[in-house]
Length: 395
Image (tube, rainbow, N blue to C red):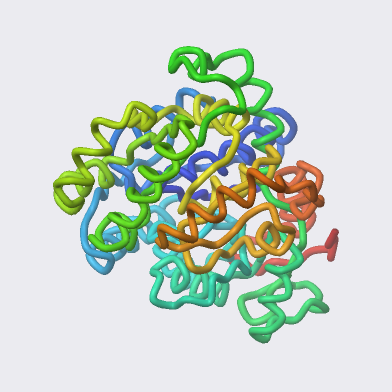
């Protein structure tokens, strides 16, 4: 039986892992055993534990409870703990998602232990190495044995960095296999959007009219922790809602809530608190978030995952970043990069209101990414000394 050790630690990874765990449970339980390691990078129970229950993800076999801390300190604690788990479990593959410190820690621990690394969402680049996530992506890709870029752009980025698309098995760190299998979040979008339609009543509870409100999320450190940027973003929220008389719903990340009080100017903080159109709410469940996304008129976010979900639900998206790893949605015209610039945000809303995007090409596959990944790993096989061989089954 093939053993996968899956490392997760942040909300988006928990959600992504749900797709693979679901496929293993329903179609591969006799062939694959998944061992889940939750690093505890997101330690707020409303941002982590609740998702295991709601998304029917198996409870983790290990919970490292690392919590917050400086990047080096947090990552070091994860590496040490994951190395010990690898010695005990002896998996055929270590599977990582995305670009968090948990991703990097898993990659470093496995590479030092000679365990082949499977990187889901490989090849994504914002081309801004000052972002910790960009460094994590690059380093993780370059020690991985199996790389699964979600888009053609991701594949092209890997080729530009010296990876070869024509490598043949046996795959190793020095001879990695690259597979264009689609985006695993599209799998989840198809599965959970139907579930959200029947199990979430968040839109009615908040007394919102479908397609008549803005959904916003703000959580990235450079937006929450820099006073000028945070003030510019909330000034845009204040301007949009006041001028257009449209509700704006903002599920507040704990860090954002704390920094609003600390960094917003007194006048702006008071105006936001008293604005009847700005709805500051607690973090919501994944199904509630999907329902809010499906019913929104427009989405404003600094989250990579929410950018894609906006695209999946055919919603215009204003991105509160200067770059994005999901370049397809910007090139297609369904999203616009506005950074933390008040006027650019306000202008983008007006432009989208006058000319909503109509092009939503199938950049992200057919919603069968998890199945494709498991099939490829099963086809490869593995021996006790982790020498991996297999068939080239790129899609």
